[in-house]
Length: 166
Image 1 (cartoon, one colour):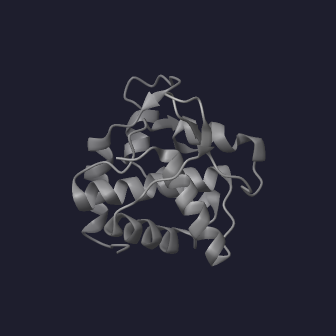
Image 2 (cartoon, helix red, strand yellow):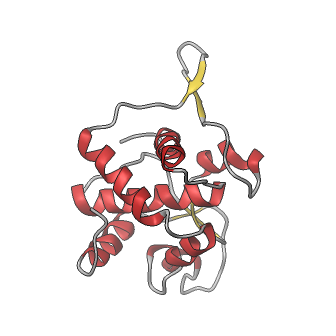
């Protein structure tokens, strides 16, 4: 598993190479979709971070916080992480496996055809993981509502029966 900031930086680099501009909302959705396809394809999480249900869809708080300085504009920086042993702050980077890189590039290629709000709409499907948490049967909206990996995995397996991004 990787820190979502590492995935964000990889996707931002790939997007830049393809001439695709990503906003904070966009990068959050791209990570969510990559995580979902990773769960469905490999039966293991891509990221170690918790995914929360927020108004505009799934959010990974550390990624949101890394890029909130850009507001709704294009992301022009990269996320950083602190080494807790040395206190050194560096860009969040990881050595991804070849199959993970392929999945990340494939999901970016497919989902970059959608705008940030269209991606948000895709995460809001009735009965989907976000909807199950955000619109819980008790009708209460709570902050920091976690979307379970198992719910995401089941959803993307069902999606994979009709279409695939790989």
